[in-house]
Length: 198
Image (cartoon, rainbow, N blue to C red; front, side, top):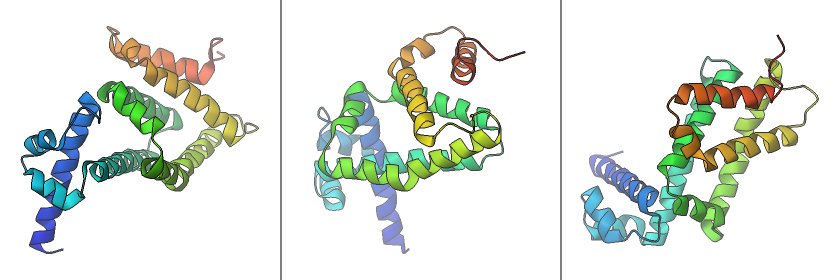
């Protein structure tokens, strides 16, 4: 990669990060190219030259966000910590994600059709599902997940728990002792209301 291409890639990343910060706070609809250019410290012309339109920029930013998320998950899978430790980190990351990004932005991602929907489906098929399959296999190997449970049933429970926790992130973040609240929630996740057998 030559110097020009390096500078271009660095500027594109700068624009992505600025866009993501604005989208996260205000939602996609309320942010315009002028505001993005100002935050990224580039001209509006540069944004149009690199991305073509706001719509194309949004798709690019969503792709960047999903890839960052999956890179985090893949690194977590390779980390030398227990299944329980990995779940704790995923739980904390879900809470952080839900708190960082506006409801409008998250709803936009969920409700989109067309290119963004295809992008999300592709990432789910090629990266997210394989990651969670490996994670569930690890959970079974370490004895945290019953061997007779299907992948589909485990993922239904996992998503139900994590999505509800993310939906009420303020419940976690307003706690005086977040570590205690996180531990309690993870104990519920692993052992239910009855608790771990002594």
